Image 1 (cartoon, helix red, strand yellow):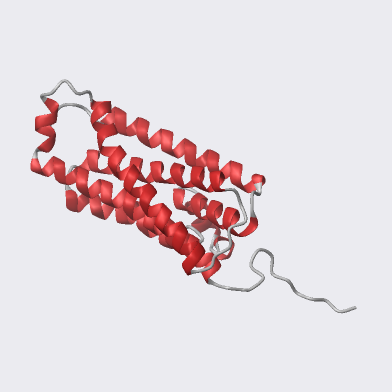
Image 2: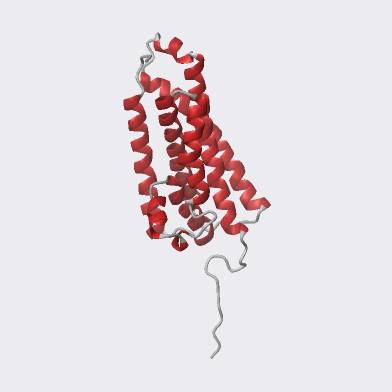
Length: 213
């Protein structure tokens, strides 16, 4: 009897199959969290919100107006990333498009909520950018499973990775693209991202008041 090794979900043993989904996560993090935090914090510094606060527009409507443009930009960036992954890097796509779209939308909402929460709390562009890099970009790079296999990390670091949304989005992208619709992996990760999105927007709504300090 001869034992033949076979790699599941990546029979060609191509590193780009695992790296490209991680790059998509980094792009979504920059577009959602970093760009939103920088722009909103700059508006605090320039006094743009002072003019908005004297209008009858409610705080929730102001936040919605800040979210929608970057949501559209994020969707456009996501489409470009997926087209590049499919046709430029030849990454397989074995899952459902609607699952991929829902996963990406939830992560984008989480990133937008994180950027809004940070920028509405610190209200300084430089400080907001530093917090986003530490709280969103670096974890998306180091603790998401993009560069390092999470099961090979120390237990304490692996437990810490559960706090960051990029971990769940990387798992979703790799599963949908390389393995297909594996619901035992997809549903828990979708639920966590949905819960994070709701929590972040609730905290932002509570903390964003139509008043100047």
